[in-house]
Amino acid sequence: MRKREPVEYALYYAGKMKLRVFPCYPASKVPATTHGCLEATTDTEKVKEWWSNNDSYNVAIATGGGIVVLDVDVNHDEGKYGDETLRELEQEHGALPDTWTSLTGGGGLHYFFSCDDPALTVGTGIAPGLDYRGTGGYVIAPGSIHENGHEYEWEVSHTPTNCVLAPLPDWLHRLMQAGKKQDKREVAPTAAATGTWDKGQRNDGLFHLACSLRAKGLSVDGTIAALLSENEARCNPPLSRSEVEKICRSAGKYEQGEVVAVNRPKPSLIRASDVPYEPPRWLIAPYIQRGKGTLIQGDPGAGKTAFACAIAAHVTTGSPLMGIPISTPGDVLMMSVEDDLSVLRGRIEANGGDLTHCHFLDNAAGLTFTSPEVEEAVKEVQARLIVFDPLQAFLGAKVDMFRSNETRPELAKLFEMCSRNDCGCIVIVHTGKSASEKAVVNRSLGSVDIPAAMRSVIQLIRNPDNEDECIAVHVKCSNAPRGQSIAYTIGDRGGVHWTGFSPLTTEDVTAMVKRKEKGIPYEQEPLVQVFNQLITDRPGGGFWSYEDLRTTGAKILGFPPFYSTADLKAKLSGPFVRELQEKDGLIVTCGQRAHGGVRGIRIEQYQAPQGYQQRLSG
Picture (cartoon, rainbow, N blue to C red):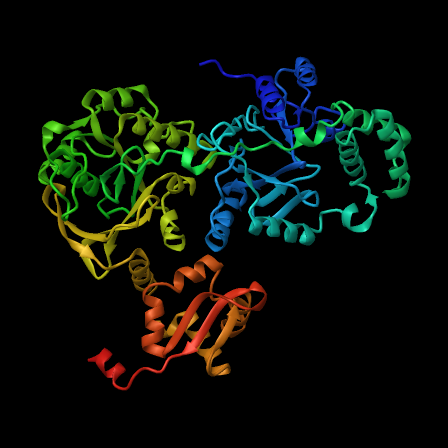
């Protein structure tokens, strides 16, 4: 397929989408026009003229005029973790809606939203790794090349052709407003607030006023006259007459009455009744879905490959797993570079699998998720399940697994192939070294977009109270309630014996593992000491905001008792909360809201019924 040129992208944005574009120098964010985004236009003839000077110009989309872009900066080498910041914010406020999303060449993401607030200009550092672009700003668009040589691309399931531009969520709007006020690098208050435009605001203010006047039908000469008056009255200091005329001529390139319409893309309105409902197609409900991805993650020794081989054995025979039916039994294709084919055969055989319905591709090293040989094999054997072990071996040599803009497209293409062939997909991945400090679903090695792209994530872990037993915990399921945890042991030749459903959650097991690794008794846990001191100082308990808890805890201990709100929430879940109640009579509730919407925790003193402690100890 022929690769489209930058000018084709620019013409599509300007002509079809009515987005204002302008050129930047090749592999750069520096405008190639005199006045940058002030010259952005939807005039396709002007677009052709610009790119005729240099067909390698990058494509920039001007923001504002109804468009605001959230810039998520992800650069682990420079300590930028905007993806983790965004994930924490979404856990607190709710997930971002589906909207246009582009993958930047630098490893980040651009989320496009509709918003008519002109006071949202350019905000940097509104939260760690998060910026935004509104009035007077711009972003480099797909069709461009980053200075590092990587391409800007639309995220395959969130392109302007298959996704509606979503309104800016209220909570994100408030964050942008608050971030702008706190950003000392921003210029003084906007003209809307002060009645004047200072340096850095004058060109932008006059340009948008000129656009507004043109939209109302004023001629270019009339716009010049009006802006000269506003320039003297509101600009501090006023711009030169020639500069004002340039701004008016730039706005005058639009037809009278056109500007407002072209600056604000109109989303398509679709009735919910016109969208066909497609129920999930299960292989093993609710753990493995056909046409989607299932991630199996775990530490070394957790039996990831053995677990996958046991699943494959059940699919080949159709025998239920712990009473759970196999919805579509059939052939399995296993892609592995970690085990010899004879070892894999032995594991499937030890699990009672039908070897005539299990297939391998020899010389799998060098193949990727998108290699044509893979789909050819799936079609040939009509596979109901395909297994990749491990993930990083099949991403391809040029794909950095820590960059979401590189992993997402590859995984999306894989799942499209699975959907075409109606087969389930298991991807095995190792957990990172600092996995125990992350949210359960994000413990896999690589970008957080890897588990985000999956419809199901299964965490495998050794039971710390019984090293011979492993536990498979269903930590994510996008299209159904999560399944029960399953306990199993691994025997000769990697055969798996299912021992039953387990009541343990990953949080339960993680808490026990951490306690065992650190060798810290309950009484010496930092939060235990802080909570007991707080209840001593304020008998009966009460509310503490997260910030108050961190500050007060640091005074008590000499160091903060938690490093992030997500960390605190993780600790205040599962067995630790029960221990606080049973051992110290404290009921600690996370996520409480005080007056003004401030969130934090509430601590109450619990009086156990008479004889309760004796029953516990007995």
